Length: 463
Image (tube, rainbow, N blue to C red; front, side, top):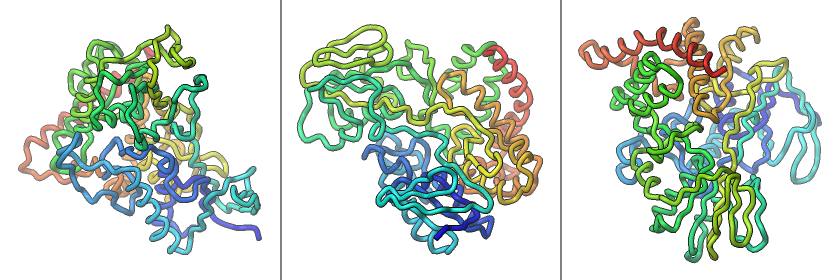
């Protein structure tokens, strides 16, 4: 029989789960969720076994349910900061959310191992059976980001027969020593692979790392939530604005951001051109700097039995080397589309790197505002970054959205209470006798308008 629902949601990954969670809180809508996986969690189902969140777990998940309960790591490379949930923890979290909140609500119908065919048919990937679904209100496409992970994305380079090339997932399943390791890919996955091998005691001289472009990375110490990290968090935001105001050019801005402790780079002698928002602790960065066999000859074109051929030359491939593919794009820079377009909602970032926060906010805006033009006006989407200069464009959109949200008291109330906005809550809890914090907030507010003006000037030079 045909299904009727208010919202048909494509994808039960973090974006889809965060959207539906808020919709359940703010409306009485009926929801059908269609997903290709056998359980919720999206790409976390295929992530490498040793994966962990980049950012504190307190800033991830859905609005209604804590992910880490505010615990801090006391040992390891993240010691002193809020915990980073593992992939296994995230899968369990999303599964519990489905079983304990979504389905018991009586308003969610979950169709795993299925896909949407056309605009109104759901097809089972197991049986091939099709069922018509009518969405009375909207179809919500939570697959726009086109997330790529090595386990499900074959290498874009040719690999000769006999070369031992594996996705990064296989590192956790090694059963014997390797003669050496060639890590292909310089994003966060490649960084994680290198850190994992070093943690297992692999000699850094036995690791070669293909790095087509060096990337700027963010310091996790600046991205913590809570009153105890107030000076770090708001100091970080304030320094960004002050650095913008002082910058004379885009290259000058990047060096100033580094000098202010906002940005970091793996090799101090190489000026990065890429920026994907990878987040590291200072201790993790120190580990990566132990690897001196970094190959900067562009992307891999092909690998044969004895050589690795790159865009700008070749290097030998010693016998017995394990090639570890980490080259999947992660979150590609997919062009933005309007969040609301006819009968379709397409969740995208509204704040830099605010994946789940943005999905929850979009659901709240959908539930509380009627006019789609007004919704789109206050929810300009952000294209995920690739180049270092993309940081400016993301910040410009984030600031524009934030300024528009401030004009709606009801939306400001939601932001003040939203768990996924917790990084900003400490500003509302300043006591009159906390002079240092008050002075910092004054610096922050005083720099907003000058920073926005300079941001426009710098972006204009990019064109």
